[in-house]
Amino acid sequence: MKLLSIAIPSYNSEDYLENCIKSLLPGGEDVEILVVDDGSKDMTSEIADAYEKKYPGIVRAIHQENGGHGAAVNTGIENARGLYFKVVDSDDWVDLDSYLVILSKLKELVVGREMLDMMISNFVYEKEGAKHKKVMRYASVLPQNRVFGWEDVKHFRKGQYILMHSVIYRTQLLRDCGLELPRHTFYVDNLFVYQPLPQVKYMYYMDVDFYRYFIGREDQSVNEKVMIGRIDQQIKVNKIMVDSYDLWKIPNRKLRHYMFNYLEIITVISTVMLIRSGTKENLEKKRELWHYIKQQDLRLFHRLRSGIMGNTMNLPGRGGRKISIAAYKISQKVVGFN
Image (cartoon, rainbow, N blue to C red; front, side):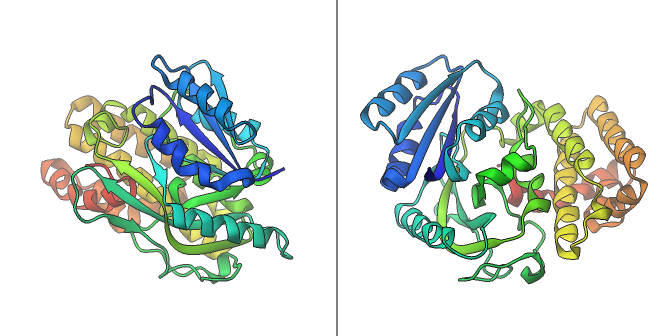
């Protein structure tokens, strides 16, 4: 068994896939790199095959019909032979020094008394053209240099969330919680982090800038215009999150609070995008989304509405819509859209 499986969901990634793979190869025999070619029409499959041939036992090329990012992640989880599992998108990469430190710590923790469920580290927004790189770090919230549980977690600021870029999960935990991401749907990375959380008991945080999250391409899923064009997929993910759990029944108060806040920011992002599009159709979709939440869980509806951002999002009329954009900057921090 490998220590860590890293899945690279890849679709038409010929321009940047090699950079991603090369950043992961220093993990050596401890790591397996699963390049999941999701029905690419360019040279992605050939690049994946070439690296599998050159690094047998480390790189595995998996080819499938196009099913979207979620389907590629699902395939990675199904095929993973590693004790732990991470997703690295094909246009992103990892920092070498941080990578080696994390692998060393994972090895050390494997023989510990508690089986670690989730490793958390920082990620850097590698924004096209930006001189100063924003780093999402968690040192103010999470204990360092020890295994900890939810009771040890401090209060997260608005805009400070554990995202897919931040986490390495225990592979069996992902399987045990039945995680299966929807096909042909963007923004499923939120489900990847959110749905397993109630199964997580033991965590470890390393204050290293491990993951490099590239943003700034015009065709990127977190580009604002692209997000508005795919708003139905964002709403779909939002509703799946609403349906995933009765949050009121989660016994750990801090975990429950964190999950409420996570659901709130995703609902804010959906709402902001619907408002910013300015179309009658999308303003109707905004009303429909909030009606859906109300029908599913009245207490949750009131909880989301009573939050500062929920109130702002639902002020009536054109003036209210203008004010609602105040929450935009907070939601920007979460997905890094430009």
